[in-house]
Every structure is written in C-alpha cells, then in structure tokens.
Image 1 (cartoon, rainbow, N blue to C red):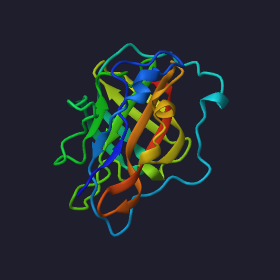
Image 2: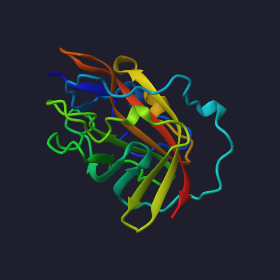
Image 3: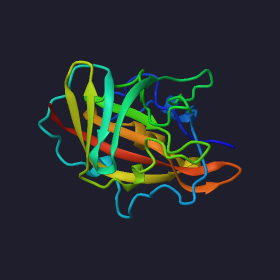
Length: 216
C-alpha cells in the first residue's frame, strides 16, 4: 500500500519571512501511513485560510528559549500524546514516528522547538495500514481558535491558538507557505488527508497553522 507524501522542512530554522529558494526547489517528501477506513478522516471546514500577507499585529507573548517538546495536547479532538524527535532520512524525507506507535507524534528535531521563534513542525499518522485511527485522525476537524498545548523539558508549556486548517493536494503542497514564517513562534501540525486511492494512499495533507498565544 503506497503511502502519502508531502515535502520535507528545511534542515535548519528559517530566518524571519525568508524561505531559502534552493530548499524549496529541492524539497523531498515525508512518508505517512495510509490505511483503509469505512469513512475518511474529517476534512477542514470551508473558509479556513491562512495568509501571511494579512497577518494581524504580532502578539505580546515573547518566544521561549529552545527546549525539546515532550507532550502534545489538543482538547478539542481528544489528543494527549507523547512527542518523539524525528529527522530526515538518507533521501531527505522527514521521518515519522514508528508505524507500530500510531499514537505518537513526531517533532522535527533539527528545526525550531515549539514555543521558540520560528516555525516548529509536528507530524503524525492519520491511521495505520489496518485502518486504526492514528494520533492525528481528527486533525481536519480542528477550527480557528482551538488551543494546542505543548509541554517542554524546561517545564514550560507553550500554548498555541489555531489560526487556520487547510487541505492540500500532495502534488501541489505549498512548501513555502507551510514551512515559511515571520520569525514569530508558530506551529504547524501535518498529517495525511483528503480522498483515498487504493494504489497511492491518501491524496492530500491536512495542515494546521497555529501561533503562540500564552506560556505557562
């Protein structure tokens, strides 16, 4: 069963409002498990869009110093999951949590830690080859204003507010939009989504855009 794909993030944190052109052109892919469900995962509701050009004034919350994340909580969809560090494979694709641990989320450890200045990336399986729901099965059901909490090794909790949830065709994945940033502490959650084809797996990716709005 073929897995779904989306381009990998940059090998190092992005500078404010800058996306290296060479990286964008040479983007690889990340492999996410594709299973078979009687019903496909939730899709984002219409009208939720994100545009950096119409971004409101930055919040007053200051970015946190770097510290590894350890747990992800999204009350709106019942997620309370441990986080593991993931990197790139030899082909330049973003590794994901082990397929036999669908309840685990993966943080791109060579990028920005959640809560620090820049765009942090977290990925997770939507389901398993057997069709069992993964940690991000309901990701497409999130809506603007939902809260995402990430606990860190420094005993601080970075609290993010969802700004948009979008669904992209995997062949037209907007790398610069997803992985780019303003230098503010932002978060992207990514999983498979959209329609499902037996020969290729899921046809798209669900992406959640969120911004740091509180620290506890």
